[in-house]
Length: 166
Image 1: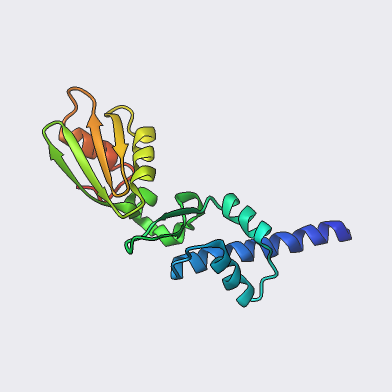
Image 2: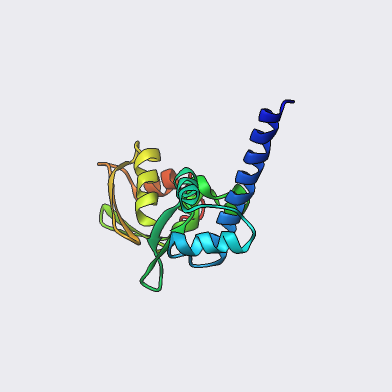
């Protein structure tokens, strides 16, 4: 192994550790700005610049989403959350899903604040045989099933990626 290869390996290890520290910070604190996140990383001994942190946030697909307190904070998306965090629950949709209620042929799904658009996107992508479309707000999704699709069919198709749906 030459010096250049060694430097790349060390850099990748450092980046991996920094990404883990970023995830840990976001999961344990309401990180409302890059400055706060940068200071957290610096306090943990990471030599990181604002530009590097910006690239990390983009690369890790971290988003700023509404919080229950009315502000905005960085949150991990399905692509940035390790599988051990979501466990057996089936992913971001299972984590963000709260309830579903039908009214006639339509359904309304309640989610955790900030999760509705991501879950609606997953429904639009994964349940095309039963769902015509969705309309999402911050924590509510209007679900429009296709013609002649029963409530049971909707629940069955959604249960493939939202295992806690009933």
